[in-house]
View (cartoon, rainbow, N blue to C red):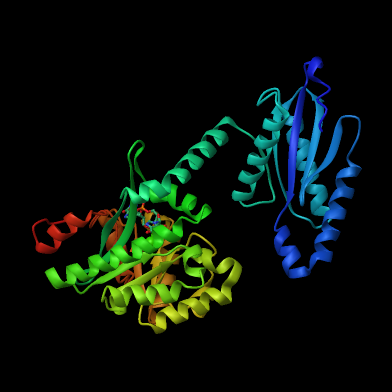
Length: 402
Ligand code: C2E
Ligand code: CA
Ligand code: CA
């Protein structure tokens, strides 16, 4: 147990947790011997920095606890943490770290450990190989996330999730191309919660599998209904999370659901982000090929934000590429950088027979440039915001103009 011996001395303690990055991957790809070697090395590195004020403990499998005692300035905790990360770097081990401070954050050792652990996990989420100090904000965010996660199942049965639809338009003909289905959560206490907040949480607790299947079914049903009521023959784009896509029965589910709802796969487009290719590139590509074989369209979302690897464009069976709104927002800037990049992307993928959709088009200036660049489709607040089901029906009836 950790002995907080400075309590009387009116000094601070820094409680650090360090965790080896991608430790599981080291074990899985290089073998357990290599994993053990990294652990032994890590223990040796940390032992080497021990002195009167610094104590080191093994915490869990690949987590180490460091206690730095008797400090009066927070900046010294940062220096020690950064120093430890760089010593690990020298041994070619990447670690992430978090720390909490006694008595500022808490006077309880258990709580200090939990706080340091939370800071460390935030460092991982922010891209690993870095140090973070615990903050009260982190804690509130964590508590809100836990609260939202625990509310999901009941919210789902109470029907609090709703699908909205944002129209997409062909630039040259101005005709409706179709809709992107976008999920909303009408939480009874919190009010409307956006998917940017709750989808990542649903991915953490796997509730995305239930939500995602519901989204598919709901979108298919709307597609069918609009086809029957309004002769709608456009495309329904559906976002699919990596966790959902990589689940072994996804293709089978997609196929049986579309049969059950009697929708034509050529009217459906599955939207994925580059996130799916980071770990299991070949497996993800194979799944997409199967989906395409069934006749569904495949759209690569948010292009321009992640790796934007041109390799993906080649190895994936894409039918559509969505250029991220960050590009569109800067497309009118005078330096012309975004315009040039967008131009190259559009002309390259168009030659490959892939459709282009510009996302987040808000201004006429942007539309005019996109038109010049021969971008095929636009989606954005300029032509239409996401609408609920009823509004879409009014729009398809011609009762509301956008
Ligand atoms: P996304 O797939 O990139 O969806 C486009 C987002 O841009 C939507 O945000 C849309 O409302 C917003 N948007 C559209 N036009 C404009 C514009 O002109 N300006 C600006 N500033 N924004 C515009 P939304 O609905 O909040 O969705 C956020 C993200 O949540 C989506 O980004 C998508 O990644 C995720 N998401 C939404 N629905 C689902 C779903 O059913 N399943 C999964 N896995 N993810 C979903
Ligand atoms: Ca999308
Ligand atoms: Ca997008």
